[in-house]
Image (cartoon, rainbow, N blue to C red; front, side, top):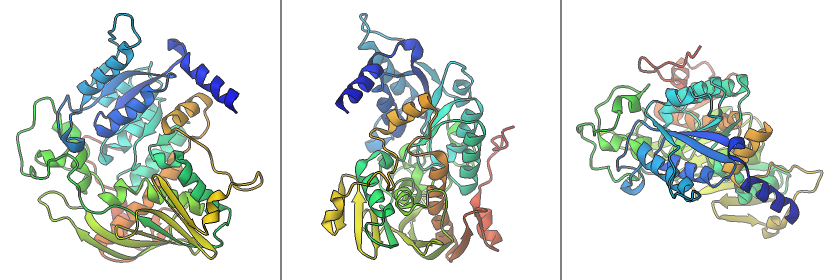
Amino acid sequence: MLRRHFLATASAAFVPANERITLGVIGCGNQGIGDMRGFLRDERVQVVAVCDVNRQSPGYWDGGLAGREPARSFVEWHYARDKKSGSFKGCDTYEDFRQLLARKDIDAVLIALPDHWHSIPVIMAARAGKDIYGEKPLSLTVHEGRLMADAVKKYNRVFQCGSQQRSDPRFRKACEIVRNGRIGKLHTVRVGLPGGTPDYGRTQDRQDPEPIPDGFNYDFWLGPAPAAPYSPARCHVNFRWILDYSGGQITDWGGHHPDIAHWGMGAELSGPTSIRNGQATWAKEKIWNTATDFYFEANYASGVRMIVSSRLRGGVTFEGSDGWVWVNRGAIESSPASLLDYEPAENEIRLPRSQNHFRNFIDCVRSRQQPIAPIEQAHRSITVSHLGNISLRLGRDLAWDPNTERFLNDDSANSMLRRPLRSPWSLELN
């Protein structure tokens, strides 16, 4: 094992420049730059272009600076370290992602945009023959997620969703314990998500309209979302507290813990049959309007009930007839405690292995195999959060068909599975 690990590491460290996977980065905010750094640590990757509608500004995590120019500077600094001259100029910048996608020399793209900007670039990237690392949550709506998954399949692309908990051995262990019946018959899964609307960008007090900053193409940032006056609290990291662009904590974390719940349940390619007993408190800010406190139940044909709430212990708790296992980032517990010593035998369910989410994507770009977090499974996971939000907004229980991805005999609920897109943007990408 040590020899294989050394050879794999050595082969990655000496990849000639003309054999590297060329990567374009679309979205240079906090998550985009963070993901980009992860790819820069992989010697098989060459970042050749970055794209963002914002040249440079504060307002990201902790009020920090981000945008296409900081991203370009970081890329060129990174590669300059290996040059005798101490300088490197080989990272292009774009304001319009369509120009980046038009480049024939780009193999793959990282897409790390606000939720309302996930579907169109993903579909266009798939059509352009690019493999895609797309940030979670996968989609803004169930309809958009379905179109994205279908496009990736149609054009035979590799897609990795940024649900990086699948590359964490603790989450995999918890799911293998459950999938192999070590807690007996699974009956309840408790999914604890954060609540509130944290002021990540330090812009909460700036919700009134302001002049658009120089270097920020705000109309492009809005894109397919409804027209609205610019304010700092609307954009960058705090966009997630506005229903026009996101679904609050329910979807922001919906690409994480509900995804692990599905993995442990063996429901990666299915979904619930009903959403029940919803309760929510909604933000009352001038422009922030997502749920700050919430509870709903997703019921499955298997008899399993998934409870999703901001009132539960953070993480995922699987409860069975003979025990339970709880897992969160950095921690795992079980009853009985001896469950944590379990490793699947060769004839038992062994879930896919990944130790690094970014490297797993590049591995699959090269091998053409499915990554650890493929798009169809990401779509099914985030659908739970979308259904929960719809039920909470309507204030009633809903019946769902996971095969047709439609509510049963409910036109008003079905109308919320998609959003109208502001002209000239469209999902009809022929």
